Amino acid sequence: MNKITRALISLTDKSGIEGFAKELVGLGVELLSTGGTAKKIREAGIAVKDVSEFTGFPEMLDGRVKTLHPKVHGGILNQRDNVQHQQQCAEHGLQPIDLIAVNLYVFEKTIADPNCSLADAIENIDIGGPTMLRAAAKNFHDVTVIVDPADYPQVIQEIRAQGNTTLKTRFRLAAKVFALTSKYDTAISAWLDQVDVENNPYFTAGKE
Image (tube, rainbow, N blue to C red; front, side, top):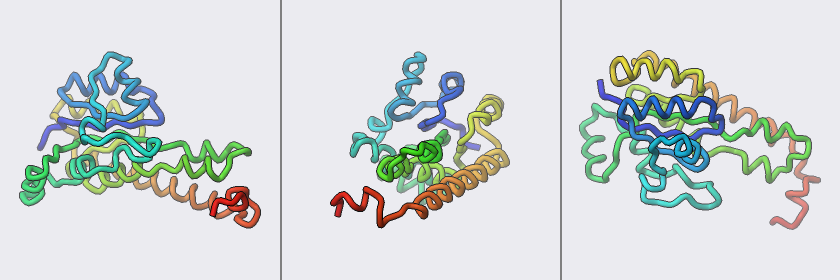
């Protein structure tokens, strides 16, 4: 069993993050993070590396592009027992990312505002988060993925005991990811489906 050595944390719901991050660092795990999450971790006096430093590529397009990079997704998706994968990782300088803790832009909270515009709703559709979550969940054999802060204690307990989570725990956590992303996409689809394209200002204000 490989040990968890590197984690990427990018959260909208930051509850419990300081304690979780501190525990991970205490267990020898390197932390990668983005934006406000990295700021909150640093303010707690915990070492964290910006994803942009890890990838060598800056966050850009108003934050739309942060984690969409081969060094992130190659680090997540490589199979640790696949010789060819490991050769390719070595060739291209890809380092493993063994744990992902991510939750998503609050789309449903955004659209709950009766004054929410289509443009506001669109900007609150998360792209990088679901992509990382689905990648990590697909590769649950090797990667621990967390979408719920309630799972932090069990994950820490297992890493403390054996350097990694159990395969059964990783599978359970992966299943939670697909339940979440399915619900998220359904909420987006349902809201967009009710937009009146004939009368909505987004389509009538000369945007074409």
